[in-house]
Length: 387
Image (tube, rainbow, N blue to C red; front, side):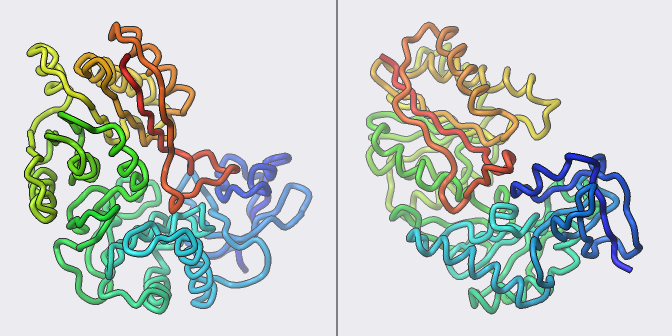
């Protein structure tokens, strides 16, 4: 007999509104018996059917709902769901590189699919989807006909599901670097060892937007493989790309050479220290870009993260020339937009600069957010003008 999960009184409201997560502490009782990772039916406290999803007793997220009406989690279901997600992206003009499936936002919880040209990079972030890896890969092959699929499930969040971190080829052959074209710029994506699935596709539109602001000398901090650096290089006199990873900086240099950019140089080191060093040297830039990794991955880390964000933004503002721009980001949903704005106001005050906000953006439309699931809204992108 399959699992039937009954929620405590009132706990169904968030889930009925579209959120897929059922937390263990929201459950009143569980009836039936099945294996971990199986489909479980979820009901309100008074017995109204809400939906079905994969259950995992090892996780605080007990059930991830994705079937709201009838249907089974078979090959046809996954194929149709992936087609629907992909057609949405194609309708917006995405073609060569984009996030094809964004987990909960595409009603496929814990599944990430990124398209890099002829190749796919995937993440299976829960027990339920991990158990159906072969089924899902079959659907991906049918929909995309890729040359290869590479798994990048080497992420810490899998430990919360009782799963090990894994990566490797799931289908076909995958090269070390997958060629893509983004904003007219050729890039080589390191799908095997790069950050996340190899590249941060959520900043695509934001990277193009910086071309308005990146004249003269530009400093790109936490540059990773150079997405912002290369977009800036299309208009800047010189771009300095900084990162602590030598591998990332080699990727920057390779990508700059691929496009014939001779105005990009790299600097390896701790960005916090690099910013302080420039400040001591009184070195200034026409534009400074700050796109750090998530400083907080849990609510308990927000206080320390706030200090970290303020540190780099104060120092970043200090080294922007009068009339120049600070382009600053946060990719942690725990650092809310309101909190990020508060930090920027304090940073501007402490830097002694007069600053105005000229543009704000969020993640690209291939990373849509659910209004019912705040976790899916995470990226902040601010352009500040130093006057």
